[in-house]
Image (cartoon, rainbow, N blue to C red; front, top):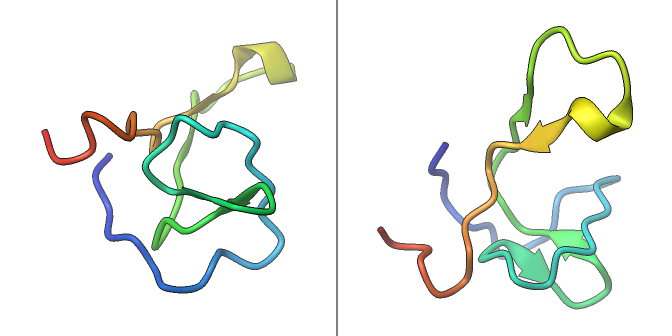
Length: 60
């Protein structure tokens, strides 16, 4: 999923993945929107942030 980067972080979303294009200081996410997958996950280990883009590959 590719989305725009906001000037302000998403309220209530904590992200510690500092290699993500959308990560901002304070462990926050600046993506316009986020998508978490898969639909039928039964625990946190099965979930994935589909919005993640590595900061070096963010425009690919």
